Length: 254
Image 1 (tube, one colour):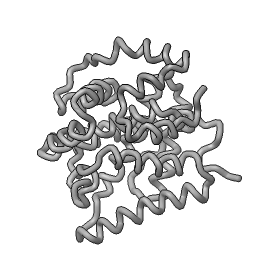
Image 2 (tube, rainbow, N blue to C red):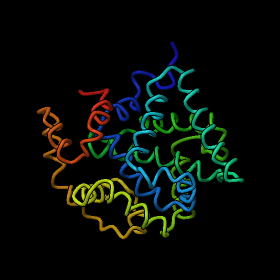
Image 3 (tube, rainbow, N blue to C red):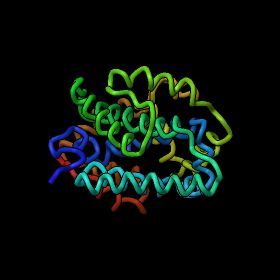
Image 4 (spheres, one colour):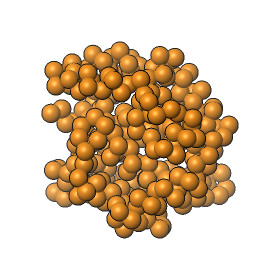
């Protein structure tokens, strides 16, 4: 059977660990809030009404792509495109192509940044492998102007962030929703976690300082993983309603 992502791929390791996936979406949650096309996320009302639920919905699609056969992964990508097409038809105009690319670019950046934060640095070939997987997702979705390689993507990513990110009333509202649904303590943890993975441009717009209160805790967390005690920290930090879904994210436990 042919898989969309080979079983030995670094992408499966990245997306097969709950802590890495949670950092991916912590970073994306910050950058989403700044995107100039964020109004699309408000059109259906689903994201501000249930941001955590939407996160896990997105994770389910990502997992179908990363851990499924070629056919099943392509079906998942086609479904994503169909859902967005339906929203476009209801609103009466199309989501800009650059907005689709921005989401793809976020997944590339945060996949690499989160794994390197929690595990180890990726080499050039592994970064290219990450890029290639999401490049093929973008191709299947019919996106235009995708860079052909990771090296070509780097300046495109910088350009997108300069052109397509801005602080707005949606930014403030989304962060209010994050706080409402997470609670004050967990929201603070979210902010400190975001500081560890977001690019400088995002830090600048959100007025994040460089230092994160979680930085001194990272070595402790890594030791807890080695001792198989990281579940205790996750139970403290994550909403109880989603513990089962979070545990299901762990495919690679080594």
